[in-house]
Length: 483
Image (cartoon, rainbow, N blue to C red):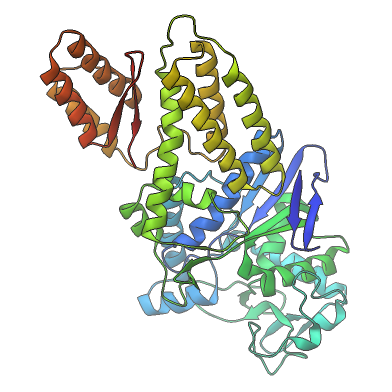
């Protein structure tokens, strides 16, 4: 398996530092407002990466922090006349619910800044003891000039970082590029006692302290969005390695921006779409599909049309799975061609994902495989066992993206199916799929009895709620969701 390492600027062979355990830390949200689809793009990308690593047999210890104390949170809390931690708790809880709706796995650990103050103070003391920090009237700062390899992640040169260019401006600092480890402050509800006086952590120190406290001094993979390369991840490297003398992270991975009309989606630009609004307008699985169809490193523009196209693409893959589930072969079928297609699809899928998680190439294999499954079902040329086995492989691979059939962001589909069942006097307890199959079987029985009016009514009722019935050459029927 090869992963593009931002630290080296090239793909490198990946192996964990210790056995099959992958220590992975991804920078999470700063909850001063609702999370937007730019956050969703990054977190879904790393969710897919995490799931694939687990699929390949790795034990992934996944940490995703919450920055619950921050300048933006304090400013917004003042505006809302709230305590900072109350504000961040509110938006954090909302975001966690939205992430689950998007099919994102919960992190193994979700550390918050407010819960790691002792570890943060301890780390600053280590940095200070090794001569990489100094105190001023405003706080404790990291002395960038003393860390000779500063800039190795971003390519920034120490003498090229200008005051005000994404760095903190403070006349008490030795150099403009020096960054805060501890800010002296007495903001109610957001400050803590420390050896340097009451205050709060700087932005960057939190992630180093939490990552090392949970995962150890050297982690395998550190991830985040592209805009975190500098200064956040650059500064994490400097302070962590200054404290321990060991590499902080072996691989750095960064997701490309989600844009709207070519501009990065962000709260500061005011061009963001909240996850809440996205979930109201689009199916969660369609948004996951959209993000999965782009490489995690590539920028992508978000439009309603692109989500709809992604939904159509996902429906075509689901159609193949559902065709395989309901397949009834013609007599004497069994040419073994689908068995070979399934083996090749799985092998090529893994090759694509092993190449820096190339999801577009992996998806291309799934589309090709779906065509083979649908063709075999239409022709009735393969045995039932072979077709059903192929369908299970398709489900297995889709599950890595959490896109297997049956995923839905709400109960609307189930309610609609129940209503159709009641209309035609069909009582079925069980999963959504079982109820749909019961309706299709009722339609087939009506056709056999030459009750074409009832047959057409069932077909039209299913079509009205987005379920397309497929009549096959051999007289059987399958179905799929329309997009």
